Length: 295
Image (cartoon, one colour):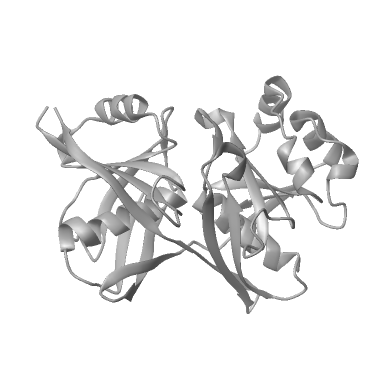
């Protein structure tokens, strides 16, 4: 195997050593699927990305995403972090947009700058698809919740903007903190559906400058809990608009995640409904932690 450049990034991090860790590998174009999967398992973060092309092909960069367990078609923090790395390490100059060509399709990421440095990144996610709703008792049993913990004014719903999630509205942060996955019941829940991960949220953030607190549980992917999940929060943004959670067809909010596992993360969500379609943008910040060589 040729020498590969390896980076560690923190994504959706307001400062270094927060947010969701991401491994990015350059020079992976000659790796086999098995070698990529083995490296993703060795690195062990929620996802590792491989930059397959360091030049644009038809306006986008070819990128693949692996969890420790399997390749996935789309994930939020790998998309945002890899676009940031391409701008910083490959393009090496300010650009308005970097588009990644993922298994799910082309995902554009736009940049804002302050004093010549990247301030925020935003990804335009695919149009959301809403499939099924769930019985609150089934969700409660799978995650040790009481029926009274779940906000019955809104549906528990499966949503996808590229990767499907079950969105569960809870009433309090206390209920969020009590979440525990009952693995047999959880795997029974997801057995015959597309969504394998569950995002819970409530309107009681730790930080008053944020609007919601969220947790994402995903044992299926080898990630019992993720500190920041852009794909799940994109689904949440679409759900919030569809169900008029804030009473409007447009949102511009901040969601905190990872506080319960000491990896505080902040995700910026913008979404609006136009002509019966919901447009979703997920944003945040990225920090470089380390770089080195894999041999």
